[in-house]
Image (cartoon, rainbow, N blue to C red):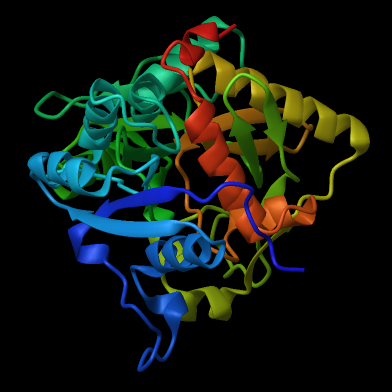
Length: 348
């Protein structure tokens, strides 16, 4: 049965100018390899649901949004931006602009984006509230690399702000001061951002999809599994593993429902909801956890506005709970329409 919404909406889809998808897939050999796959899935599905859809490409000029709002007069903006003017942190300011224009939008609010984008700040907040996170230290650009005595090797080194496994490789896990210094300097050079080194935790990588503003719902916890992990390699989501389909096939990468006891699943889902609230998140987010060999969960990263394409972790996790892709997008739209800027002040 085809999903149909109750009310027809005028939906402005805000996306990066370079990710404007084609009108059809004619001539496209493999959509899985296309950078605009998420944009295509969202636009075509919302249109098939019966809504009017107006894609708007953005790069570095907020006036584009102003003109689009005046011309389109959308009921809501579906926000697919992950950067603005080439800066990963600036998407939060675009959302602030939408709030200033009183334009309803999907996804996370500016405060939640600001907190989640800074991995160190995220961990400080959660540590204060006794939410388990790996021990960590930040190494600012231009400063000498000095390891605090409280941290022990091995350490996992990455950017404080970059997402999508940027700068992450097997070499990101270091075992001595010399390699730590090399990797921190590599992150500084490659990402032009501060580096964070956190305690490497051996175990399983499990993701929890959370959706909602005040009332929260979790979907089935999802696990990243590397079936043919090369000898000597660690179970980590490197950039190559995340973005190279051929390599994914080679190492047998699968993501699937995490096999957890009912008790552990309840513990993880409750932890995810509490984390979501403490970080002032709204809309939808994916929370990445490491489950240690003794059954403890440590938050690695909070990802507001995660990958929302068909057949990706968030959509698959929702479908495992009986929520088909059109229903998921409709729920995201409904949450955007009902969100109020004071909602994220309800963190507890």
